[in-house]
Length: 291
Ligand code: GLU
Image (cartoon, rainbow, N blue to C red; front, side, top):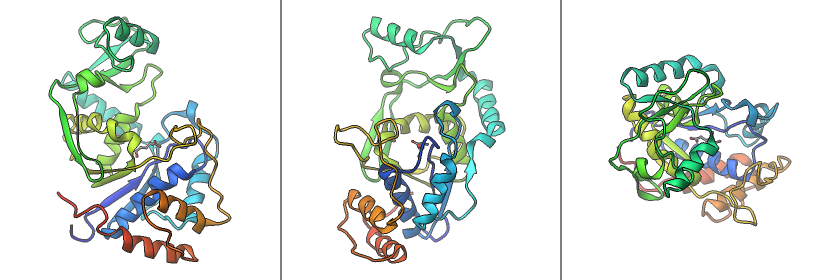
């Protein structure tokens, strides 16, 4: 890829301070952008206030600065992008791709169980019915054909969305935007060419590709890196008790994330030395970029 065409991003939800798991995603996306002489952006995904923690976004940005993972433009906040999401929604509605759904999560699970489906699969209950006025979620129809893509780390991945996911929410009944819509619209608006993030989101990617196609947005390349698990085998997150990064020793934190990504300790003494060593070692690690 020629210089300057690559654009990557780190997109944390401000639910708490950065921890080792989020640092792994931030470092991997930063390294991939820098090693391709690309740009790197930070987007705070603050579209779910009930899950957010006051001051978390500021703390996350301060942590990134302490680790010298500095974006090429000021960070953007999804909470300011409602107009963008409304436009995308209108576009989906105009082509009949979206319908109102009055089912609670419990109702979805009950119906899925009755039909012998996994409980997290939406069984299409409201697809062809008129939902009474009042608060309702908005779901996008999914295709019956498989969505297939090749992840740079995980290889080919396919999902039959109808059977494995079902029509999914683009806006929740409480009026909040769904992650899937917001992430696709913003990746498109920011002209992101490369998404590098934790492998817990691998199986969200076909939903995002489906939305990109409906909205006629380009599909970026994807690289999903291993997630960090706690002692109980759960993904490290605020809910599973992840410890905030100890920023009194930034190099030690970067080394931990680096080792998790499968590399040997660099033994460097400063953040600058660590990053320049890591950019060199990262080059070629995942093979050449395929358009
Ligand atoms: N905001 C999402 C999270 O923190 C990540 C979104 C993404 O990288 O696509 O889990």
